[in-house]
Image (cartoon, rainbow, N blue to C red; front, side, top):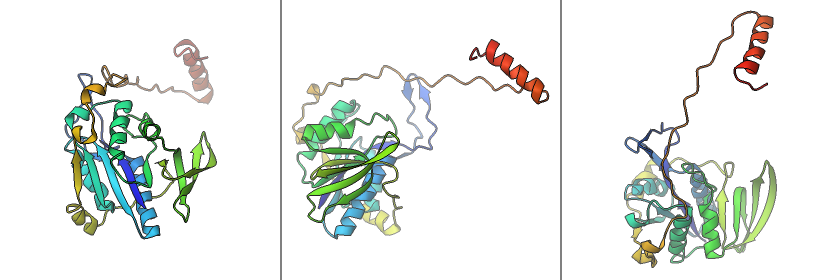
Length: 259
């Protein structure tokens, strides 16, 4: 069973993001695989191990520096990777990213596509769904349990929906997005880290995908980014419980004007 996992290079969630001149300051940022994508990678590896056959391929759109992130996925156990590495295809919105990934997938052999339900940098949760639509594939979102049928022609998915859970069944190939709870991603072993250096990463440009960057106009433009305004300092109200309560009510009514 050939499984392709879509991964994205994002800032480490523990990184303190700084904004300058309307843009994110990237100097000094640590980069990781988007955490939801990690669930996709782990699930692909578990399926391969259970079936004892097949291949796991990572697909990433990103700059040259994204290779370091791709190697992290290979160190976990993925077999190989495709890196869409073309400056002309970067900095697009979700619609452009989906078109580029879909064009790459059309050149690949797969029985299943896995992805995170959203990337933790932009949190728009659109790319995977758009890719499925462009490839005319069924798509199941926010999956927390995935069972592949013995004949490998269908899958049963348990997913979270608006605080509840439901079960969806789909034919394969399909695109399935991973939610927290699907599994517990493994840590790379020393052997895996060393072996990742020898695993193949294929670079594709726009021409390899039959794409003309001039025709990939984004539908969304980010004009500038600004940090949220600083919160005013808290206020400590002195006195006993009765006195402090009366003062709190007065402040909520007269200053905060919320009651």
